[in-house]
Length: 192
Image 1 (cartoon, rainbow, N blue to C red):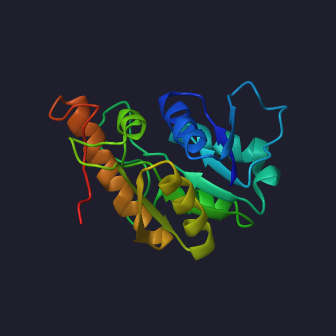
Image 2 (cartoon, helix red, strand yellow):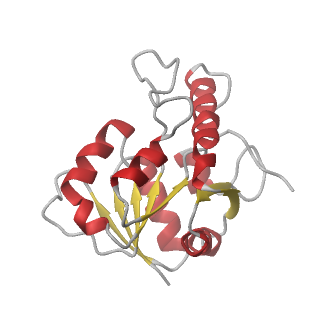
């Protein structure tokens, strides 16, 4: 099994930690005050808001070299809740990959809510689907194995450049939930 480090102890960090542990992998959950604790996981999940990513990369960039780094952020303008704050032809994941050239960066978990990860369902659909984008097939396979071991479904969404579509989908889902058009326990499901 894998050893996973999760940077961020909020709802998503805790939900992902639960599913990782439930799938038999070991997990370390590190909060913002744990900066003296080194990252030991082979897979590192950035479960922090987009605005905190630059600080995490500045503080822990050397520790992330050689690791699979999973970006779960949705780079929303949280003041207006009306746009993404990355260029239209870019993504938060692409920015992270550029800042961490020795890491294998993936985009995942940004199109799911913490409640759907914890319950394993979206609107009664079994199981919750986690979309994964990235340029390293081995890294995607490793993350998919962690996800499927927990009972969820993993779908390869293509190369890292697909992260911009995943972020747009995450943005739409968040704005629908914030506008009470869908529940925080709902969202999009991929059915095949």
